[in-house]
Amino acid sequence: MMRQKIPCTVRKTLFALLGGLGLFLYASCSGHITGQLAQDASGTLQIQAGLEPNMISLINTLRSLGPAGTQQGPILDAGAFNSALQTAPGVRSAALRNSGREKIAGTISVNRIGDLFLAGNGFIRYEGDAVSGKVSVHVDRATGSRILPLISAEAVDYLSALMAPVATGEALTKKEYLELVTSVYGEAIAAEIAAARIGALISVPGTVSSVKGGSFSGREARFDIPLLDILVLETPLNYEIAW
Image (cartoon, rainbow, N blue to C red; front, side):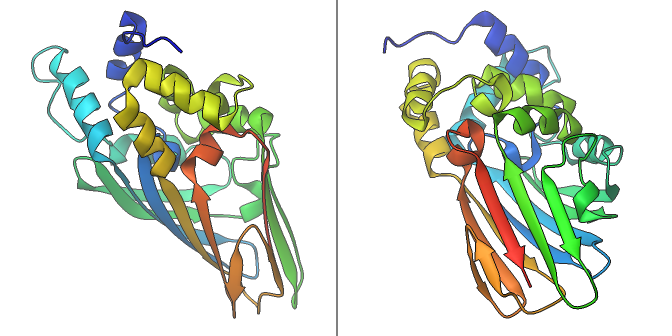
């Protein structure tokens, strides 16, 4: 594949989106989620996420091309994330903060896990009673493109500029996507995207009996998800915890 220069429209789109990006779906970002699910299906999520060095360098370069003064402030804007999340279906509150210019951390409270980002999407399903329960997650390219605007309006344009199939809907393999990113942004950015992972530790209100897509012990389920799997969705993602 021939190497291309970054198109002017892509540069402008990326620069415009520096104020509020795609939370833990941010390309070239590694993160960790710790969640607690209660018997009534309410829950809390503790989020930690940060950008990788080459992505930080790229964004700082783009920021330097903008008007004077726009280089200031966090690269990941916790306030912008809070504003978007607090209006999303199923979210009770969002209290994220900047732990660095390119890092965010904090807590998101959920009224009912099965209603999270629902709005007709239904990508999380919850079944439960006083003694047992099951929560499952299904994400494919169709549901991914509907969920993104509920997390952050800017995430759609940003991830489209990065050509991620979760936003564009284009049917690419992971190999094809990394080749495309390499041709536009270079090998270092592609390598960071390929290496980034999302870790999750989820506690449920009973002893876990089975997990799909992860491991478990006692009341906890653990997941280690390559970010590339989320960005490309070459195959649908399916995760499940039963207790």
